[in-house]
Amino acid sequence: MRITDMSAAILGLTGFKYTVSAFTPSINRGALSVRQASKPFVLNNSKKLVASSLRYHSSSNKDIFELLASLDDEVDPGKVEGTDLTVLKYPNPSLRAENAEITQEELDDGSIAKIAKEMLLVMYAADGVGLAAPQVGINKRLIVYNESGDSKKWLNEIIMVNPKIVEFSNAKDVENEGCLSFPDMRGNVERPKWVKVEAISLKGRKIKKKFKGWESRIFQHEYDHLDGVVYIDRLSEEGRAEVQPKLDALAENFGEGGAL
Image 1 (cartoon, rainbow, N blue to C red):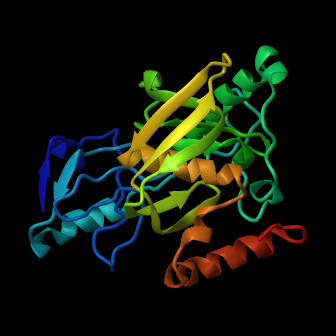
Image 2 (tube, rainbow, N blue to C red; image 1 turned 90 degrees about the vertical axis):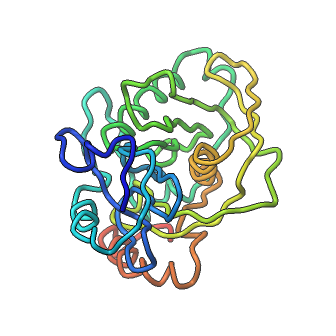
């Protein structure tokens, strides 16, 4: 393996956390997607990026990969200071419920801005990069994300009200995804490479954007939540079978009334 840019951090500086999600078919753990000759990035609702480029060259680096794979993945933050919002886990019915469009009155009274701010607090506490309102029990068409996953880079924060996809590419790619509402689970998900999006801001202004690459994937994952779609719905039969025991355990723990 050849490590560039932030190699010192990966090899031992404190204050960083790393995991491996997709290195070979036999390794599927954590948040960092590592592929031959590719730029890895933190997958949805997971860790902050700790290296801009990793390249695998030799199995002699097995110890390094085992170290990376053993470190923490996204966390369940529980109660977060500054908010009563918490991340809901599958099969909470909120994840499958219909999500209402946000009204101008709700924007004007500041309630949506407050919710968005608290959603960001929860997202950062969970080492996430995106969060949709139904994941915290608010069935409104609202998403927040920060592609860097770094609360200090607040200028990267995106808040979208009533977003909709108006166009998407025919070309698709597959990446390994996880979700805060599905702890300790991951899987390969196929999505369009780019999407064109319309939404409104917290100030009621129209937003038109084209998202590509990593940002496109974050947006599409969170947008799915607004339609009651979760990442496990997009897994292959093999991918679904792999996580099914954990899904069954969550459903059993939740008890009656879960929305599978």
